[in-house]
Image 1: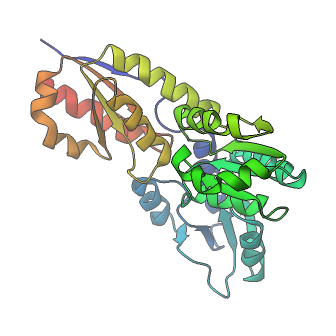
Image 2 (image 1 turned 45 degrees about the horizontal axis):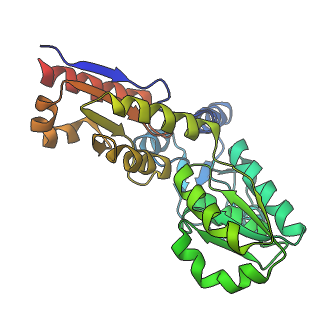
Length: 290
């Protein structure tokens, strides 16, 4: 009996990632003689990074003292200091911060300028969060990052004593993390302002995947283990049905028994997963099904 395979509508590149990848490729095509580089990895997907590398677009793990050509700021954004350092090194800056990430930065700045204690819901080490925090810290020392209420307990007295608390969220966070933090802050704050800055693409992707999981024997999440939105997707779905998180179709070979047992299989993918990787996963499952 052939397997019932469904692909989520909201799977693969979101518009911020697509815009970043297309723009960088166009920049190189229009300036073949100039050095085009990206500070950090443009997106969290090694296949895309290798493809850009083959086109001569290098990812810099750190800024050289002297550089030339165009240096791209990736979709996660950067701190104001980093923008200055890029120019100081001699590059022309090309800012590809995702518009949704820019909105979070602006909101965090606005809170900081207006004497709010800024709480950023997110993973402290994530490049997007590092940049949001640095932007807010230009205007206030009262800025903290947490992805659970547990992490806020250390700051409870400080938060209680502050007149106003403003909450912003990493664009790829889970709504459940935001809800948990808001529930913790509500009884201890005098005035609480929440900007739900989880991007629409993330919200839709998570909502759709949850619905698919309810009617599937197996969910397959395709995307990098370094990608926050992809790992969150897998975490959410594991509570609903059997879920595997893979980066490439080859990894399916380790799950042959599970695939054989599952009749209804649904596939979703993170915002930085290219379509050709998703297609290979579908082909591989169809082959196994035969």
